[in-house]
Image (cartoon, rainbow, N blue to C red; front, side, top):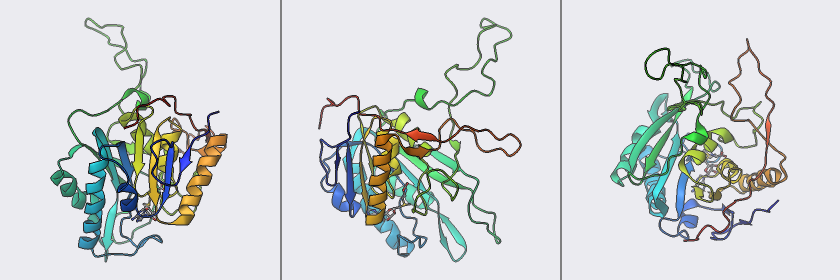
Length: 305
Ligand SMILES: C[S@@+](CC[C@H](N)C(=O)[O-])C[C@H]1O[C@@H](n2cnc3c(N)ncnc32)[C@H](O)[C@@H]1O
């Protein structure tokens, strides 16, 4: 199998740029309109072990700088997916997508979906309802953008249902390729028993990012994650034949990323399969975890910009 080329600094001929350092420093090396998809989950400023809590206005000022640079390096047909939850201040919640939307909007980006990512596990609140969703804001730079629905269709509820009258009588009434997954995604978050769990307190599940990568890019395209954590965006991109750039300030997380990539290269990285149903105690299903392997990028000849 073709070995993927990893570089720790920006390099157009790498398959994966795994940068240890500040995202703004890395982005200053990336040319205008170079990447096709940016997908990330920034720090939420809630005192996770990798962040220092800032005043909301200071946090937003930091985010503006990163978002402006992201818009500069994004291809004209490209997309940005910003995954966020709530900032919490003394029990009062501030949904970060509401605070961040005006920044993207003022930079001319167009919102295509506000995807609700619903999951089953999290903190149990006692003074309000327990939070069980976060949001992905999907923006495009222009009206002409990549969107491939077929690779991310999900099974129809009644796949064999047919029209019972009219000119199409007897023909299938739904798309045999599956249905649109809609803008509400129920995907388990990565907690203690999840097969993908690492040392990171809030990593993405691979299947969440695969859905974005498969629908918003083509094979050989570049994906970028400024806040890469333990490299879930890199895994979801490389196993689907995309190239990827990521930055992370904590060295230990960069090391975990690189180990996960090595495992995926050997086909030994365990991930939760996209086709697995949500666990139902009355009807447990036994689809085992899948082993991810890196899909060598087919279009090695992709024109470099
Ligand atoms: C919400 S976590 C992202 C987790 C990631 N989605 C994953 O699947 O592992 C945000 C990450 O951003 C990193 N970070 C914070 N500020 C950064 C900066 N200025 N440049 C690069 N990384 C940063 C943090 O260390 C943290 O790991």
